Image 1 (tube, rainbow, N blue to C red):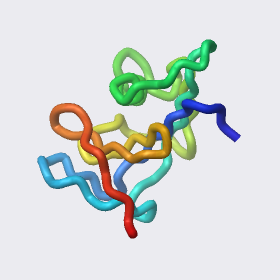
Image 2: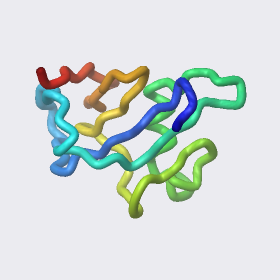
Image 3: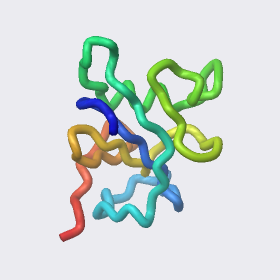
Length: 104
């Protein structure tokens, strides 16, 4: 079981890199790729940090501290992917993040 303030990153199975309205959350359309633990003080991982540490910069993102890759190697997080924080889904947008509605 993960610690409080843990964030998960889900990549869209069919990425939408254009500006489209955020979809209704449906786990079938995404693959869990990363778990990001809070720092040693238990501080909440913010959405920008989750995006940053799941992108290839100078090394593979799964080599970043506090990040656990789930499953096989994955691409960098991009527009259309979803970050869960505090149990709420947030879609990566062209600029920032948009809240994603949950299916009824």
